[in-house]
Length: 142
Image (cartoon, rainbow, N blue to C red; front, side, top):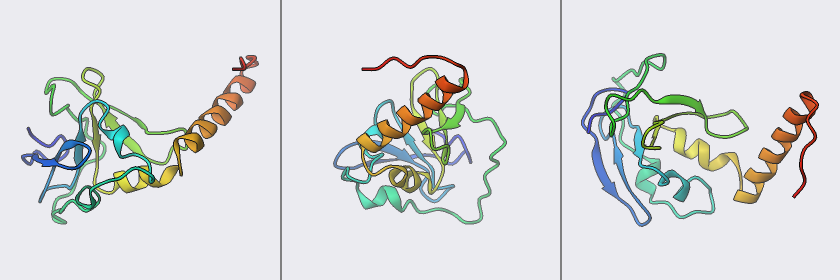
């Protein structure tokens, strides 16, 4: 597979929890197939240190404005959006296969956004409460 950011060949890395494709020696990005990112997106989840320290070629400059194609689906342009309601980390997601492309350094940022799944859910509840209030929509309670 080719890197969607710099066209380098991706290298498969097998960790304890998942197998991912990384841009080793290129831009340092990581490709996560559908549902793989959710195995390592919290600080309480075990992660192989290699995923936090992908060797990056500092000479490579990635154009963040360029649309990126899914390395699995090739002809599909990925959607760029914030990973969470905190709006701190932009990720690329394939609308067809559900895979995620993370640029170098984004995985540690995602892992540090929330301390747990409960904290993530509380932040989402607060965000949606504000949105509902803004539009005058009554929020359903569980």
